[in-house]
Image 1 (spheres, rainbow, N blue to C red):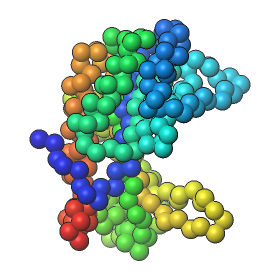
Image 2 (image 1 turned 90 degrees about the horizontal axis):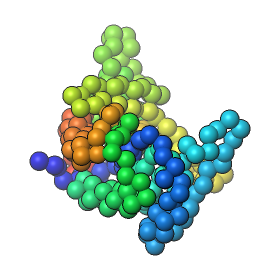
Image 3 (image 1 turned 120 degrees about the vertical axis):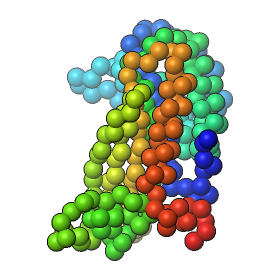
Length: 237
């Protein structure tokens, strides 16, 4: 049974992307697709094409006025990105609503790649980060010799776990935010990415694959939370 979203969840963004064999029907129908979603996604971002790029494979974006949602499209790709995620059931419904409109211009029957990605942003504190426990809210760390059980200032790593229906890529990286003003100092952060992906998916299996991906991501997220992390995100600390 899906868990409720935590009040202080560090979730920053959710994206679901499907890729398929490219088809010119997408290019021919993009104007009609844009018109069908333009009221909710009024902003259009067209990528710059550099020398050596294949223009048809470049991704264009339709964005909400506040950029809380985006649709990415290309001759071989459809993706829905949300920064106002509430619960999975609502996101899933929204994805299929928008994908249904895309299917009116082209309906792929098979996908070469499926991906569901949850990006979490946690506050970073070097004083609390150690090799054996990278973040106090997480149980993630390294099994290291006693002499290496020290505080750490940087971390970047990727672990890909095998599942029956696909793979789960777990990425952990300390990042410095972009400085928006010369005198503005923004806090460093730890980015925890959980990205489930699979290949060779039939259209009729898209919904069940998405459900399986969400279960794997949700189990992984709650599985790496420490007791302190759960309390902080529940707002009980």
